[in-house]
Length: 163
Image 1 (cartoon, helix red, strand yellow):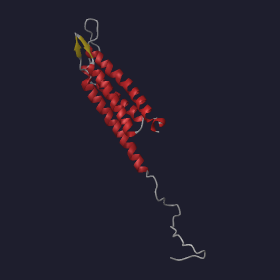
Image 2 (image 1 turned 45 degrees about the vertical axis):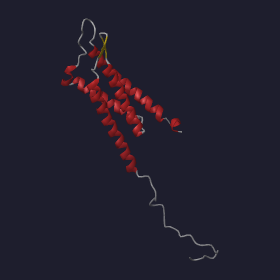
Image 3 (image 1 turned 30 degrees about the vertical axis):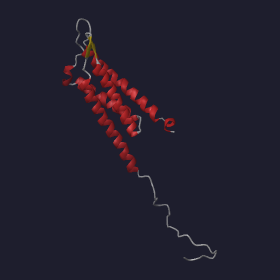
Image 4 (image 1 turned 135 degrees about the horizontal axis):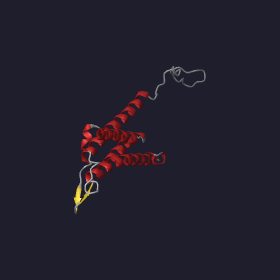
């Protein structure tokens, strides 16, 4: 070790001119996290639409009254999936995206030839059959569930909740 004129050891200097940062945030890591969030929202939306459509017509009959339990379960399922995606990715927007994807897919199925199974226009003795009510609950409930999922995700992810 060389001693300078002052008598103190000389620190070895690195030749860092600032051109190459030693520890920089890698933008691709942030970008990949964003794409994973969008992918999760897409998968969640498809899952909510397919599973919700599959179970929404389940009717429970109690004393001759049809209760659209499947539609209620479908709405809860879709809302839960949207909240899960948003909280997993820590992004409130993804709850809305999940719900919008599910809603678009449900709308496509309802308006396509596969949607010929829709019983919304059928009347039985002046009243809608329970399966038609279930369809209305599923479609309107999916929109309401999406708004609810955004509100829940916002409430959980708000900055004051993280402290």
